[in-house]
Length: 396
Ligand SMILES: *Cc1c(COP(=O)(O)O)cnc(C)c1O
Image 1 (cartoon, rainbow, N blue to C red):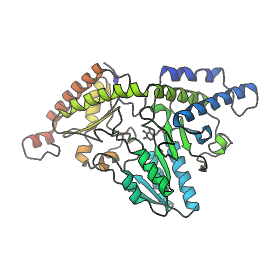
Image 2 (image 1 turned 30 degrees about the vertical axis):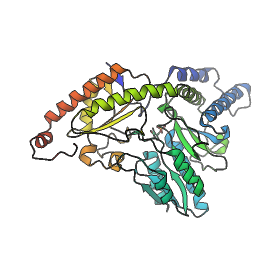
Image 3 (image 1 turned 135 degrees about the vertical axis):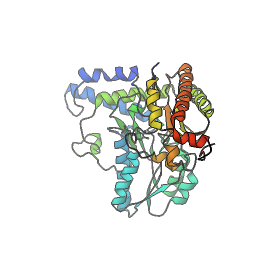
Image 4 (image 1 turned 180 degrees about the horizontal axis):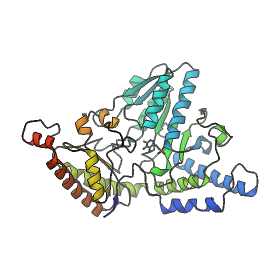
């Protein structure tokens, strides 16, 4: 069996998205900035893609800037808001402790430049409240940036409420919606969102392409300098094939969002039920307010890496949490932010499903994880200390 359950890291491209790209490699290959027919055909495609994405987000096409992905969109949104704030003498930024590194590292850079960054506590279940935001906003706050859904533990934030608080206080609101897109409805008007980041490869589109939505009137600062593409806000010849693939993938995901959600929730809940039967384990993230595709557990007494390798040997592609922290020995900042101690944080497993996951696959995953956790615990001296009472269990 070969099961891909790491869709939060990246997804397989859909056939629709692949097919939408192909003509733009070898038929319509002109540069959209060129005045000749070949260039204008590409410009027309670009126009149509921008429009179709803007309809889905409920914004104006001019409010969409194409970027190289979610990371660049996050960087540009935050740096732009900071520059706008700085001009008004406002240098306080509010975010959360468990944002993606594309956000956290950008904020760190700004901190080094004299901005004050306040990272809010996300509590045991990985949620911030609009109330917390309201209490944190000051006269000199220039930006609130809170992710829509967390990429590791899948918890979903009350974005519309947070946006409403920000608007009431006249503070710009950015959300990293990379994990939400394709799974949760996005409506920048109804949800009071000023800036939003998307990445195509998280919703069955191609890698290396994303969207920064910025409400009319927000002046973006360039991250990439050069030509006048994207109304002068993002230089570089537009990646037309990728943009076409992204638009097609987003349309497709949006069209099937309700049926996919219903299907995924059933599979997700079965996995949660199956894993909950493993002793000394804990679900990470909120039980209800979570992505339909996300299951994240910690198992006491095991190393996440060993678990992943053994699952891989059984044909299951999973993750310990973030693709970005694997390769480093530090425990995930997300798990630490919800209060997991180091020992527990090291024994983590994230499964992120997609609409092609089957019930059989889910049963196979449950069986495999049970076997592997039991096997690893049997081999662990620490586990034997706990079983014999020489050391205490941390999880029930
Ligand atoms: C994947 C991801 C990103 C980065 O997107 P890229 O397109 O890979 O740069 C940013 N934020 C979140 C929440 C993500 O999951």
